[in-house]
Each structure stands twice: as C-alpha cells, then as structure tokens.
Image 1 (cartoon, rainbow, N blue to C red):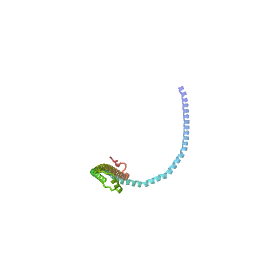
Image 2 (image 1 turned 180 degrees about the vertical axis):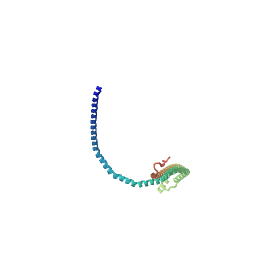
Image 3 (image 1 turned 90 degrees about the vertical axis):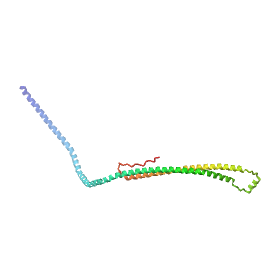
Length: 260
C-alpha cells in the first residue's frame, strides 16, 4: 500500500505533464494552421476576384449565345423540314442513277457492236476489192498483152517517110529483103516489151491494192477512235450530271478499250 501511495502521485504528475505538453502542441498546431489558412486565403482571394470578374464579363456573351440559339431555332427547324422533304427525292434519284448506269453500259455494248460491224464491213470491202482487182487483172491481162504486141508490131512496120538525102543514100546502098526476119524480131521485141509492161502494171495494181487496204484500215481505226471518244464524252457528261446527287454508293462503268 505504501508503494502504491508513493507511485500514484508520480503517475498523476506524469499524466499532468503529458496533458500540458499535448495542450501546448495542440495550440501551436492550431496557430500554424490558422496562419496557413490565412496565407492561402490571401493567395486565393485575387484568383477568386478574377474568376468573379471573368464570370461577370461572360454573362453578356452567354446571354447573346442564348439569343442566337433562339434565333437559329426556326432556321434549324426549316432545315430539318427541307431534309425531310428531300428524302423522297433521294429515294427517286437512286433508281435514276441505276438506270443511267445501265444506259451507259448499253451504249458501250452498242458502240462495241458497231465497231465490230465496221471491222467486218471493212474486211468484206477489202475482200471484194481484192477479188475485183484480181478478176480485172486476169481478164485484162491477155487483152492488154495482145494489144501491146499488136501496137508494137504496127509501130515497127509502120511506113516511115524518109527525106530526099535518105532516099539517095538508100538507092546507092545495097538493100536486102529480110521481111520474115524483121517480122520475127519485131514480134519478139514487142512480146518482151509487152510482158515487161504487163508485169509493171501488175506491180502498180498490187501497190494500189495495198494502199487501198491500208487506207481502209486507217479509216476503221479512225472510226473506232471516234466511237471511243464519243463514249468517253457521254460517260463524263453523265458523271458530271449525277455526281452531286448520286453519292459514293454508285459508280459508272467506263468504256472498255478497243478489243482487237
């Protein structure tokens, strides 16, 4: 008991000292916090004042935005009405674009058929022209050969009128009669010349046929190029007409190249 009586005052004293120290620390902490709050408040007050000024300056702008929104509301409603009225038109434009694409495809096919027909006609014309030239050559060759030989023989034996000096010289010179030999020589020379001339004519006709065939081929290529140009022009015009309304979901088939 005596020990307990001695220890209790000591414990009470220690507890009292601890309480005093705690109170002192608490007071110091409160003072420090108060100073911190004051300093923070001093720093924040200008910022809050600036925010208040900015908010006050923004109030007229917000009011203007609200007024502008109220003014734009009828316009927005009008645009919505226009969009709603355009929906049936858009639904009609899609089939129209499909029909235009089909029409362009059909035009391309028809142009290709016309091109093929032109090629066939050109080939037939060339064949007929070559056949006619061949028949003409075969038919006229013997006649031309006979006519050429006859003309050359006639020209060989055609009488020539000599001058007086030639007659005097002919009377003094010895003239032998070689009528048969002269006729044979003239006929041989005329036949050779006629054959050469006929061969030259055949070469000329062959060159003329080649030139006509080349001209016909050039004409066919020119017609094909013209048809391709017309197709490109039609496709460009259709694209220009349908581009603003067709959208990105439709494409027009371009004309194929000249397939040969």
